Amino acid sequence: MSIELYDLCGKDKERRFSPYCWRIKKALEHKGLSYETIAVPFTGIAQIKGNGQKTVPMLCDGDTTVTDSFRIAEYLDETYPNRPALFGCESAVALSRFVEAWTYSALHPGIIRMVAKDIHDILDDKDKAYFRASRENSLKTTLEDMHADRDAHRADFQDKLLALDMMLRQQNFIGGDVPNYADFIVYGSLKWPAECSDYEVLPQKPRILDWYARLDQ
Ligand SMILES: N[C@@H](CCC(=O)N[C@@H](CS)C(=O)NCC(=O)O)C(=O)O
Image 1 (cartoon, rainbow, N blue to C red):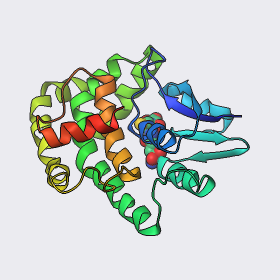
Image 2: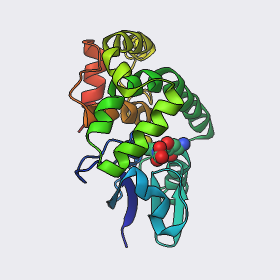
Image 3: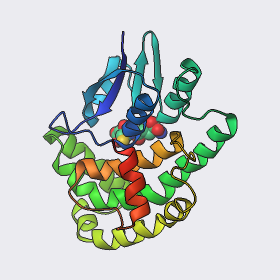
Image 4: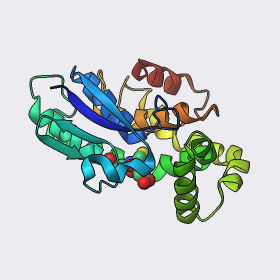
């Protein structure tokens, strides 16, 4: 039985925009594992297998169910050690945890403010109501106000990518010569706005654009 991945979707079930789910889709492809995705809207997550799940991705591999993207990546390396590594050693796991925390704290605040209104607009009516209420409550502003300020949010966000640009002067991937899970973390978060919005968030910096294009295949 092939691996199943529960993947967030919009009103159009082919619209897949979750940064955490993209990390795992890249991880599965890197390991050469075949999988199928099951589309789930925000308000369907709690009903997955009737277990009150709070977030996606959720991966089912035979009788094993794993949640949380980082934990899923660790599971894939532990379970399929003879396939290309996502980490390869304990220090890569530890460094990837830093990359996960940096991505969440430095990149996600800008991304959500640039595209929250666009995410809302691609959801079905039930998800729209849930998304507006939950995000306006957590971000303490309206979707429309964030949208109106998005050029300013983009300038701040692009400044945060300087570290990636500087690193790419030395090497092709965060993983070195080949990508590892840390690349998929950052890539997944940049794929998020690309899949839910037409707004161009990436800076016109060739090293970053080339790195993204190498991963976006
Ligand atoms: N730490 C979790 C975070 C997953 C997460 O936040 N997923 C979002 C989708 S991008 C979600 O399911 N949100 C549910 C909600 O907002 O109700 C992971 O790495 O898997």
